[in-house]
Image (tube, rainbow, N blue to C red; front, side):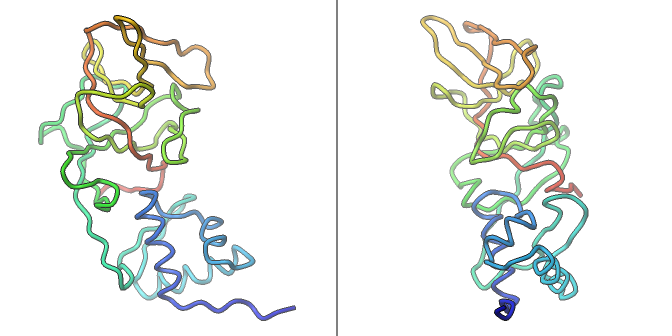
Length: 214
């Protein structure tokens, strides 16, 4: 039996930071195990304990319950993105007084030149839909790029009858369809003409428990 793989502190921290940059969320223990090429989750947990003791990361319960407090030698530029409530849960209000909190997002995800907001998902109407490989499930946060138009098939945040909802956008002939993508058949498509507004398109999903607001 070969000797266990020995990793440097910077290698483990770099793997965590890379997941945050590419996916917007920290890796799970098993994702980190595969990324590092080690044989057991116990080994990963030992490295995470080491990083926590060194002040490199913060940990809490949950599949993605860790946050890098320091970057590796490659600088990660971030920008603050507001969390503006839940959908569907009444009107989408982007004014300062309606912001629930702020989250620092890598600029490789929340790209300069556009405005973004984060919205908490409520319900299971889109729990089969995936964005960047992550399902949109109850309690998740979705990162939304603000824009008034959308392409056919985009997952959008739309305002209908004064309430925000997350649905897939489909163009018809003289009408539009806002389609759920759910395991629950009670959710039905919504057919609209001009009586709605696109608030933005969903570009990332931050899984429930991965982010704790201050």
